Image (spheres, one colour):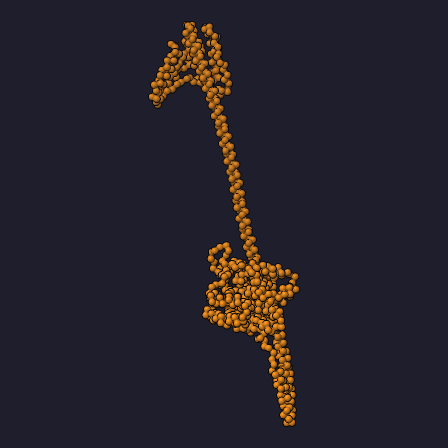
Length: 628
């Protein structure tokens, strides 16, 4: 790229005064040289017009800092920029060139180089001063004003540059300050984030350690509970073994006492038989003697013979009179009576043993009885309820703090007495009984004994009213209760009888997968056979039979099929006909119920409540075996 330089040069010195400043002058030196130049001009000027300074120089020393030299005004124009100058610029350039021509002097010259040194001085100054013409003076004044304007422009540019420098410096300082503040904020933020991160790590570690500690505590508790359960189980086994040994000892003692009593009774009977035989022989001898004497007297006259024969007949009639048989008082199968006697005897032994334990121990066992009663009352017809209550009852039975005989006896009594409540779920109670007795088999005999004591028709057996001296004695024998010295009504008794028989029927028909019912359908079939063989048809037996069929008939038919139908035919042909022959209007409702059960084949339909509900919270099917 080419460039050309346009330089305007004046004579180097005028009157001994250098017009061009030294290239190495500083700004202060330049100002001082200008002031010196003004003094010399004022002192040596031949023009009468005095020189006055238009504006004081107030440039401070600080403005010249950093400026070590001054250079002449140089304008550079590049060749590639000349093409971009339009016509208006060219016109402006022509005008400016015209204006510049006014400052040309005859003594001024153009130089194409910067090599002109300071040796040339303003040689025209004497010429200018000698001419003394007014035109030259005006031209000098104009050049001096031009110099002043150049100085002022220089000062203004220096001031603008200093202002820009200050502004840029302030901006730099502000930017640096902002950068420092941003760095501090970032550091503070990173410190906070680091602190928060460390806190989160500490919390997570604390939570983890807490969870580990909790898990260890749970495992420790499980191990301790297992150890306690094992110890309680061993203790319970020892107690049960001791109880069995005590029971065997008592049975041996009882057997020995019974043998002794039987032997004594046999001896007494033998003695009585011997006495009767002796008396019979004596009576026979007396009769023979009397007959001999009578035959003797017969020889003396036949009139006396008719007198003595009625007396012999009367004696013989008295000798063959017999007391009424026991079968006329109690009607039951002998096997059923033997089972009842064994269960009642076992219940009596438990009661005696529990009474002795209460007397020896200072522990109050009534709280366990209340807990058992509460659990029995909370039994509902759902599998969850049955499973939960059965598990809690077994845990109470295995509690070493309470003897098992006391808790089992309390359970048997509460479960039988609770069946009288209206909201009782007989099928659910049957499930609980089977689950509990599968773990504690001795509880079944106690429950059956309590049922036999509360309702004689669970044996089954029946008393004949004609064998009792009064109606009150008969009612007490068959299980009527007294309230404030008054015998309860027949309707109340029948309602209780029906609830007991429903519980018994629900118990014998209960079958749970994986658990054995020691008093199941086989015992229910035996009960029905004994009932039809031994008991008469009356209002009490009819209510008992109706309740049993409605609860257990469905399961008995599923197992025995045609044999059960034969049983129903016997009931229809014999039992119902016997009820109708009594002609009692109070029997009509129960006759109608039994007849409808047989004719409508209700034993083919599952009774309501037999299948327990899976859950009250979910309808998802779960196999029955998974609940127990």
